[in-house]
Image (cartoon, rainbow, N blue to C red; front, side, top):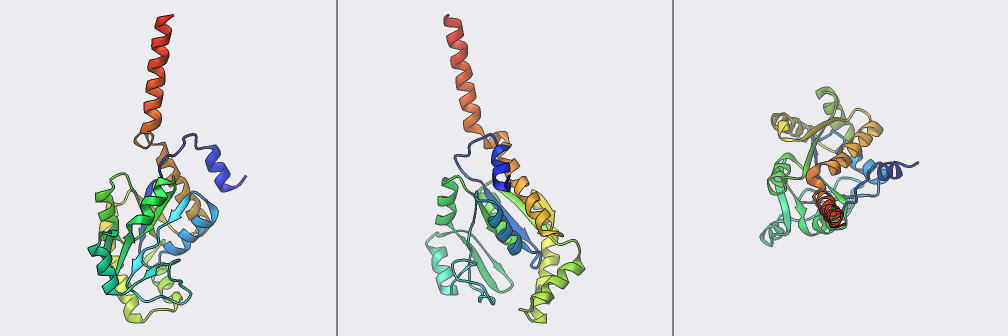
Length: 226
């Protein structure tokens, strides 16, 4: 039985609308790799592609990894209310396009936003029902090693990212969950189960609860009329 089949068999409720899930974490925590694994293993997720003013890294593709735009284009999107949120991170702007997120949630897909802490808190303020998950490596030493092993950034940029991580660590309590990414397979499974469990919350099943109430009222009325 596949991961997707298992989840469907053990998830009794029908989802009319997807959930908004925000994934954040230190730069170098492995968020991108984790999101890729989640998309490969399960077919009920959609990964929102962010717009950014930073330059592409080797191997990154416009429209797949990010929408790479100029600052002028980014500010035009802001002006036209085309972004759900935006943030400035290490001298570059990042933002979440609105239309894709709304369309995918309407299809019943759980939409994953891989965004920085500034944007995550804005999403939580706008969408209180969203789920915020923070991804971290097991130690500071591991975080530093991962950044250097990328081989795509200068030492100055790495130091900026470590300094930013120190700032972000002060705000982790704003998140609903924290996952230590020390093993990709294990972390991907934990993240999937965590997200799917949210659909079992009563407030996520109001339509089902209302149907049960109405059916029980009708049953009671018919019983008394006999």
